[in-house]
Structure formats: C-alpha cells, structure tokens
View (cartoon, rainbow, N blue to C red):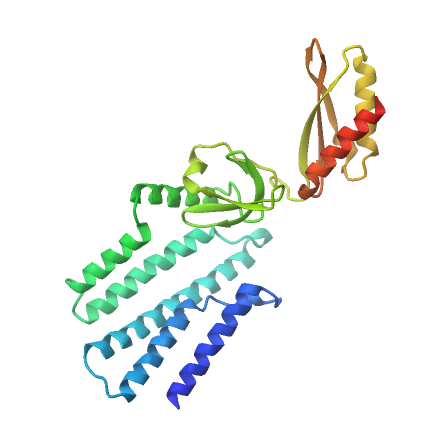
Length: 298
C-alpha cells in the first residue's frame, strides 16, 4: 500500500510539473518546482522495492539518505517559493527580488542539508567531503573564473535592476526581448530574425546596455535619420517631417515628437527624428512606413 501511495504521489508531481511548465492554468505560476519532490519520491519508492526484495546494507541506507535529503531540499525550495510570492505582493508593482538570489539561497541550503546529512552518517570528513567538493566543482565546471564572472554579473544586473525578464534591450549589437537570465547566460529573443541569442553574462560588465523598456514599458522611443536634398529649405523639410509623424496612427503623443538637423553635407541635409510607439515589436514596420511616407511627400 505504501509503494502504491508513493507511486501515486510521484505521478502527481509529474502532472503538477507539467502544468507549471505549460502555464495553461491561471494559477500555474504558483505551483512549486517538483524536481526535488520527484527525486525524493523516486528514491523512497526504490527503497521500498529494495526492502521487498530483501536487499540490505549500504545501498539501502544511501537510497534512504537520498530520499531524506531531497525531501528537505524540496521543502526548502517550497519555503523560498512562498517567500518570493509574499515579497512580490508586498513590493510595489508586484516585482519580486532577483531570481538569482533565490537560486543562490537554494544552493546554500542544499550544501547545508547535504553536509548535515553526511555528517549524521559520519562520512563528512571522507566520502562526504569529496561529494560536497565534487558538487561545487560540478556547478562551477571548467573555467571557474569565467563561471564566477558570469554569476557575479547576473547578480549585479538583477540587483541593480539594469534589466528584467520581459524587457526589450540592446546588448552586444542584439536588439530583443529578455526571456531568461540564468547563472551563466542571458537569453534574448530577437524578433527581427525569430531567433534566440545566448549572451554570456560577463558581457554585461563590458558592454553598453540600452533598455528600451525603462523607465516605462508602455512607450518606446524610436530615432531615425533621413537625408533630404540640400536645395530643400530647412523650414520646409521640418514641416514635411512633422506632418508625416502627425499622420501616423501608431505614434503616441505627437506633441513629444522631435525633429532636428544633425549635419549638412554636400549631398544633402541629415535630419534626426524622434518619436514614441506603444508596441516595440512594430518598430521596424513603422520605420519602413515613415520612410515611405517621407519619400512620397518630397
């Protein structure tokens, strides 16, 4: 009966994990990660099977230790998930603290739990020490300096709120929406090419970042340059460009439109245009429409 109960709980964690991943349910974001629970239940189920088969010794003890350890980790993650939900509700705008802080806290909790369990088995100074150090080496991996740099840069970016998931940014020559910030990389969706670009977090410290979603995510500034004939009087050109902007339906608050002369060359006069739009994904079509309207208006 106990084995059947454990198996049923294991299936339930798989279903809940799938709901969390698909996010088809309105409250699916509140479902905690089921990974640690799944491992704990699987280890407990294996332990029951081994006991029924009459297996004894160190193998059974280590399986039981694994189940207990992962259960503690699952509970720690559950507490952190609940804490982050509370902090989001208490914070203005529903913004939670940086996700990487939660991940680092969970890692610290994991090492404490693993060390405590190994110490309870009296193997922390031998096999346990190797296991803890091996786990740390696995997380850092080859190129530890680079990994640490990536983690530090991601932490700084989120603590200082340089950008968050969902922001439209420009970094390393890529313009796109931030879809994920992991320990090592920032994943940016480039809508112009319909491709994901993976940028190492260490680049954040070395490159200029333009965040188009700040200070407001409801309006985005767009700037264009256009060269008009040298024989066209600047007054006429400025009036023509202003009319083109005023006539475009997707430009918001036309009173903020700005047009100025950037430079004068033998081939023409270079004008700069600045305006705001509500949908950043429409920036390229709107640019094309503005340029086309200017050409037809000359």
